[in-house]
Image (cartoon, rainbow, N blue to C red; front, side, top):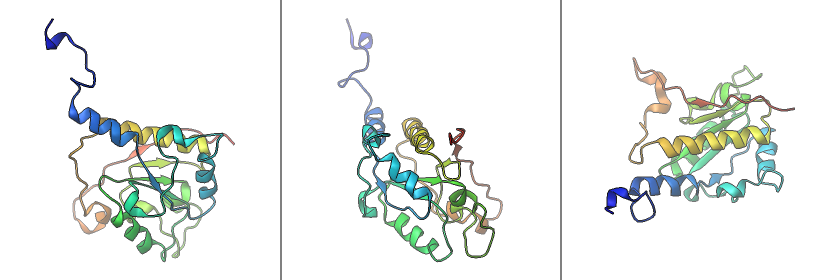
Length: 185
């Protein structure tokens, strides 16, 4: 019996798979709730939905201890520089979930005071649809992000100019994964 007959285990597994597994099971979100979607984000931490089964039970108050930003709610023009500063202070690798219609597209607030999509400020990995999205939708979004982490490259870096797509001529942003779940309310 040679080594090629053995199945992957902790001795013969690839280091890349181990790194992806550890990243996926230790994603720590930073607290960034801005509006009514933040209530649904807080509900995910309760015993009914139990986000701790994914290793995400502690929402970090410091961006230096977090690697996931869940932007929950509408982002005003005054809040946009703060959001970008918190994102820049997060450690690599970092991910962003845009939660709700207001964070994704500005929602019903089509005016000068609200940012019409958080992807104009930070690169978004996964969108959670709804107004407000239910905790089940956020859990599905988190599982979609986990799958993206599991299948992604560990050495892949983000383009720092990706969030300023309007400044780069000829650049088309890649479409992040959408979550196709109806809000059950």
